[in-house]
Image 1 (cartoon, rainbow, N blue to C red):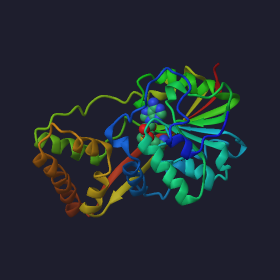
Image 2 (image 1 turned 180 degrees about the vertical axis):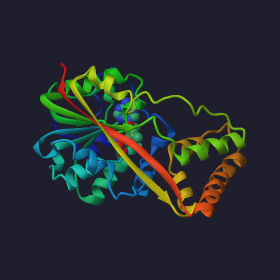
Image 3 (image 1 turned 90 degrees about the horizontal axis):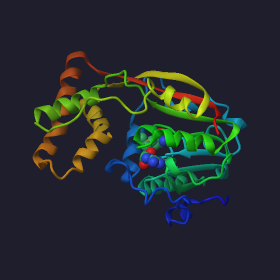
Image 4 (image 1 turned 45 degrees about the vertical axis):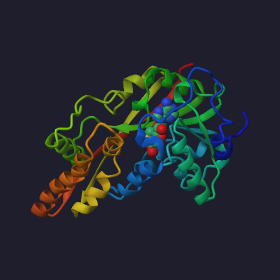
Length: 296
Ligand SMILES: C[S@@+](CC[C@H](N)C(=O)[O-])C[C@H]1O[C@@H](n2cnc3c(N)ncnc32)[C@H](O)[C@@H]1O
């Protein structure tokens, strides 16, 4: 299979060969550009000093890998450490995503870093690669977006070699973070309807069973940490990068005055905690599944 450069990806030459899915679209307005997700990742620092990316990549034998797929790569949060920290050759790394905006940010990031992995527009549920093409694959913080996760897991298993592995990171359903608590409390105060309940379709709690359909071994690893804010402005800057806030701003059915009030109320809640106890702590509970033995 020919390597796909960012340029060919963005000019549309590397669209998926399989006709199962039509023109890809970002799953939410938040993903129509990569800069917002990058700002969120850049602005989230763990108290321990660790990063999810380096921790998760440390769970798998990256250095033994030739070709690797970053499925749902976004702006390349995991793509760049593969090349820059784990010394994989750029041309052996392929990132795919359905959002052209994400791929554009990834390509810009590649130019800035002078690295040229292949980025292409493709859907994980219809991967345009031959069976056994990759030594390894990643599907990080993406499977919960897919309408058909089981199909995606089957496709990921299919494109892997017999001894290949899949790394899949995701969030835990078992954690409450102030940024979302304050967001929903402010929505309630402004009488903006929402559905804050419900569990993720792919979490640290239910993901093992889902992946087990495509892989004979699935190991689960938790990443527990904390983020800490010492000023309400710092908290607010972080709040303004999250998808739930950005998507709400994109909604035309919400009164502009309410949209203006929302961050004001969120900031007030953060200020109240910080002025009382000097800081605002937010637990982080995420993790990674390491899967081997792809079922064909
Ligand atoms: C939360 S971001 C994660 C990006 C990256 N893996 C990371 O960990 O930073 C989810 C990404 O999955 C992409 N995505 C959503 N549905 C997809 C699909 N069906 N196939 C490929 N990518 C998809 C989105 O466009 C977005 O870039």
